[in-house]
Length: 306
Image (cartoon, rainbow, N blue to C red; front, side):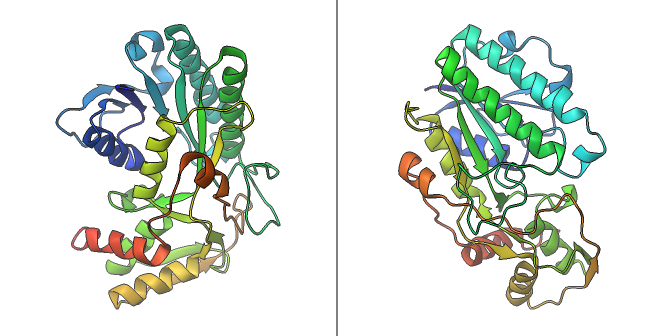
């Protein structure tokens, strides 16, 4: 494993991942829209996934592909409802075909640890739990997962799917309005009201970015087994509500939040916590940061950055 290609390497996860891979002496190529944070030693290719035509030329000489791109969010997928299928699904098939022809055996697909499961009464979701997404984003993610696994079965690839929960941490941009922790932190220090759908008891599994990055790195070297479907939850196994996030940020900062509670959304799942036993067993995955320690690390890195 020498050459790694990051599709969507300019975002929050991608920027942290690119730096980590470079530090671990891998040759890194980042493909994205051109707004990446530039690091010396990384090759950048500017492009738009929906417009990309020849993936064979793009991926020639690579040993593995890490697929981070999603063109929609859970909310936007319900209005721009064709995009997840016409762009994300179709282009991923083209990527997999290019990898097959170039004999690139490994694609790591970063899926969703929340939306693919949908509404469930289970306290903790395992990888074999029912998958009933309630938005197009989740359905598209699940569809891509199945296609990746089909390429393993039919073409002998070693694709790995990581169902990442809710990542947060250094480098997450609150202006993009993705990630409750970074948005709430920014709003509180800038005295901007926080809008919460429902009563604030919506519970998610929040995982610190460096734990996610280590999991992706471990997946690069994971040998797929015939008796183990290579789909892994990457999370902490502990749920935290929106109200708890706000209370903890207030406690650390010594500031009070301004909160507006508004109506619930039908696309939101009320409870989502992931079981990480399989990832621990197969990948050697570990949780180094619980929510309190991870939040303090994020806030310490963000002081003075609004």
